[in-house]
Structure formats: C-alpha cells, structure tokens
Image (cartoon, rainbow, N blue to C red; front, side, top):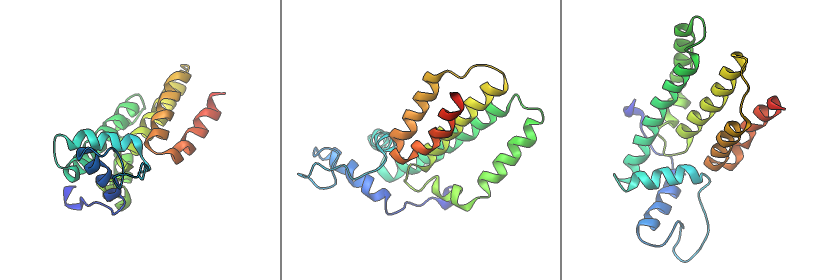
Length: 167
C-alpha cells in the first residue's frame, strides 16, 4: 500500500507549522503571526510527536499506515460477536480497500486515517453495546466525539446521530 503513499498540498501547511515548532517559533505558519493555520489539532499533535522520531513526511505516512491497521483491527474486534463475522469483515475490508479514495487518503498527510479510526471506534462501540442490550455510557461517547471534534471541528456532524440515539 505504500506505493500509493503521497502527501496532499494541504498537509504541507501542517508540516510548516511543525517545522516552526522545531525552530522555536511555536505552532504558527509564519513566525511572528500567532495564527493557527491548520484545521486538525489532534492530527497536528500526533504528527508533531512523530516528527521528533522521524522526518515529518515519514511520520505522516507511518501514522497513516499504523492508524489504518488499527482501524481494521478495531473493525474486526467489533464484528467478532456477529454471526458470519468473517463474511462481514471481508465485505468491510473489500469495501474500504477497493475505494481508491480511502486507500490514497490514508497516507495523504491529512487527518483521514485518524478520522477513520475514530469513526469506527465511535459507531462500532455504540452499535456493539446496543446489539448486546447494554447501556451506552454517555461519558465514552462524549470522549470519542470530543476526539473527533478535536481532530477536526467540522466532524461534529458524526456525533449528531449518535447523540440523538442516546436520548
């Protein structure tokens, strides 16, 4: 899958913020101008941490690949209780990895891989609790929704259906 690894131009905005942090200027695009120019604070923090271990581009690709593996593992975990889970997992795997958009954006340097993981965790956890007739703790849902919104504020749209279902 790394042969499809690429970085979108918007990711370079985040990379420049990271370079400025390393240069001692703080998380800014231009030194001296205190403006947050990236739209994904959680992803920024993850890449910043990774950039202390490897070059920023490599950290973006590595994080994207690692989060994709964790997302697929989480999907397998949530499907473990379903009858015919192997068929469901295979169908989900084929649907995800036959999507050129999914495959290519997992290593694009954007927050897509983190979003996929958080969405799978949120909806998979809520669905598995509902199907087992177990209550869904509001604190857990709020925490996952907070991570999604911290990953990118407009992802609050993913939390609406879940919150509506809890009331």
